[in-house]
Image (cartoon, rainbow, N blue to C red):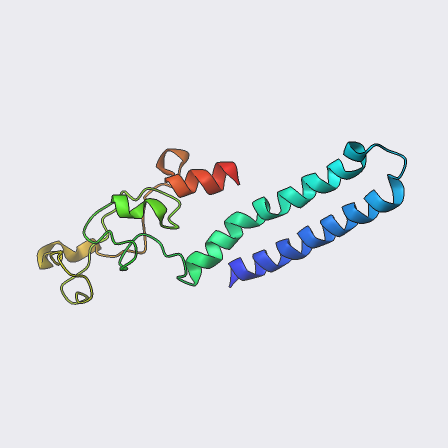
Length: 148
């Protein structure tokens, strides 16, 4: 719910800022050349979707439209830390914790062995890394943290 609230507030602010810049462009910048008149408005217009990108990634991940790499069929990493399948998932960090699926939860994945019963003390797929640092960023993490 927090991502939706943040997304809505940020979207409202981006619309307000762009409306303000457009208003100032048409009212106060009449005698200037085209670059001076339109430049600031174009900068805020380009910045708005870039600012919204990471919030949108969070919402798409929360709603499972663009899932994390884990116990799912689109980006599986069952009984592994990180696979090539995870590259285009919405996971921001390269996982270094095993996403193990217990024999009790087994069922929808084919071709992978269930995690042995004696090693199930730390089985879960909700956590990915012990430390969220720049050195653990995935390709999507770099794209959304550094670029956007």
